[in-house]
Image (cartoon, rainbow, N blue to C red; front, side, top):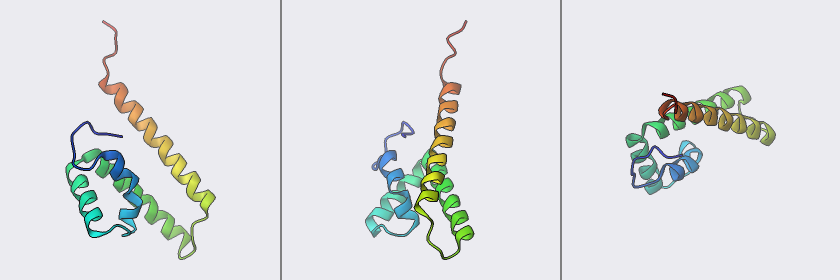
Length: 100
């Protein structure tokens, strides 16, 4: 994913590290890079917000128990499907229809 704007840290790199960021697993430098990018990039900030909400909901539902890997994979797969559908819809809205 890319918003089309130039950023010091790419959208793809930030989104690949978003769970580590949410979990507090990045060092100071990594956190700073991700936070700066999120401050500048609306699409990535929305994606980050979605990931954070899902993580909280799963955490509330499962309490202190670890999330089963198959459940995590299903949830992440569905999120990717929905995000792909949203991106396709956004792309379709911005592309010329080709009809006159």
